Amino acid sequence: LRLYYLALAARPGYALAYYNIGNVYANQGRMAEAEMNFRRALESWPDYADARVNLANTIAERGDTADAILQYQRALRSSAAQPKAHNNLANALMRQGKTAEAIEQYRRAIAIKPDFAEACNNLANAFAETGRLDEAVVLYRRAIEIQPDFPAAAGNLKRALDRQAQLNRDGAR
Image 1 (tube, rainbow, N blue to C red):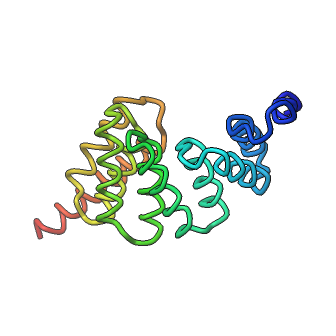
Image 2: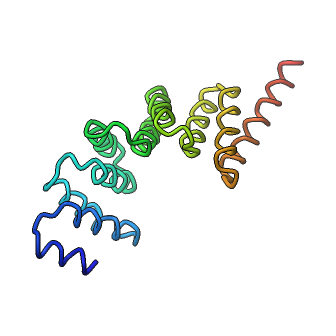
């Protein structure tokens, strides 16, 4: 932190220094300080998409989903090729019950980064939630193929397969 503050002393308003300070605080769990520094970075460089995404992440963590969505959208207007921003926006949309919009954002994340296991798992969750189990199973398997040590995806796959089997048994009666 000391070096970043020295950089700010030499160059007041240096967005990258504020951004890095924000990251340090976020990694330490000091989210209010992280948010303040991401906001300062954005005062100097309003289109700094990475700072905007990290600001949105801190806002989402404190539970302000609506503001987080706005910040993710602003970040994506500055730089649309950010798979994590699309994924995180989709997560926030899911929290608001906007599943169709979330599905579109997950798809965009995967289109940008086809090996994004977390987005595959999240899209599969959205499909499973809406009863599209066949699509969910395909995506859970893809997530595990990309990242074999992904226990959440493996657990989700098992639950989806169990649910499919139960539906098949119920349908056979």
